[in-house]
Length: 321
Image 1 (cartoon, rainbow, N blue to C red):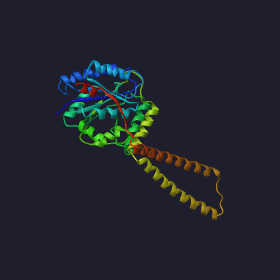
Image 2: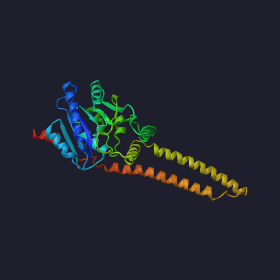
Image 3: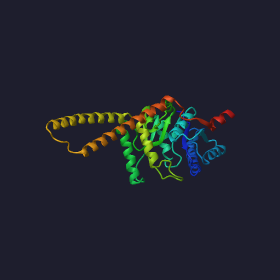
Image 4: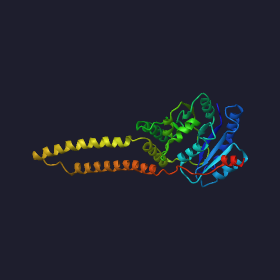
């Protein structure tokens, strides 16, 4: 089995951690090459997602010092998911298998060994799954686990406690390339590919340096993006609730008509005002959810490119040769 490995690492303002990430990955690659698990011409590809610091310069310096490092420079910032798929689809023609991971060293590099073993056993996709969340705060642990359960209940099937640390074969990447949507949520798209899959448990570490690129506001936006990109259940839930309220309104109308003919007065304005606010709020919520889907349709029909590559150091080297 061919075994040229590319590791794809999206980077956005990662100058504080990039050198250490490169050092640890180079050490791991050396061990994997010596054991024959990966080919000698395997590569580590950093994807610069429009960073405003020295990230791209560091990537170029690493490439100049050691050909095992290569870089992909996006034309502008496109967000983590677009940067990740840009890297995956750019290197898939050069690789037999690709591992994606973050630059902050929270993903356990040593788990790569078992991922590669499972690839050699015939797996096309190997998911890196956290073995526990003991190091997370109570709030983060609770919200993260609720997120995965909510996603699955709403029809967006994901792998529990899996982020974007995974191995994919070239065949799996060819399958991923056929998903053309602009609104990306790779944690939900990759399981749709199928083929033989497996998981590798690992312990997630603390961030080595720098600040997290996913504060609470961005995490909530990411969760909402995942739900609306992969599932239509929210619209169906609103439709079901609308039918329920319509049925209740018919019953209430019958009650009011009966009370009118019996000469009974309406109990007061409170119930009326509460009803108006409740129905008004539901309508606004429904319009908002439906509007979100219409907005996504609007973005999809434009068929804009998900990313543009400014430079790919690997191809530049090949042309020079």
